[in-house]
Image 1: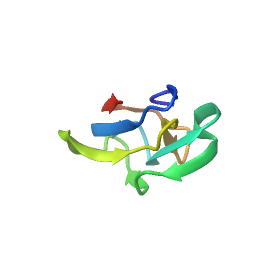
Image 2 (image 1 turned 90 degrees about the vertical axis):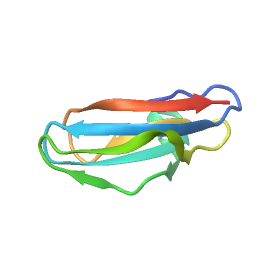
Image 3 (image 1 turned 60 degrees about the horizontal axis):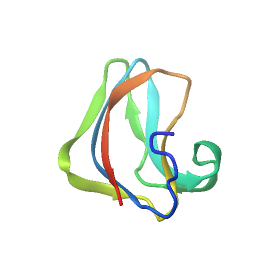
Length: 91
């Protein structure tokens, strides 16, 4: 879970970058419940990454938005460490 639920606010992703520690699929989702486990909605496609591979959306624009009252999470296809930055506004 990257951003927890906070009442009825909406989380808008402004940019992110991710570096993978191994081969992994990375996807951003939103939802309710623990780690977005209830009402899961895909916010991006799956980004297939290899060791030391990464992606960068740039920062300062609207990449995606959740719905009111939803958390934003990152979902991985396997137990691989990822590192990066996720910027957002919550209104």
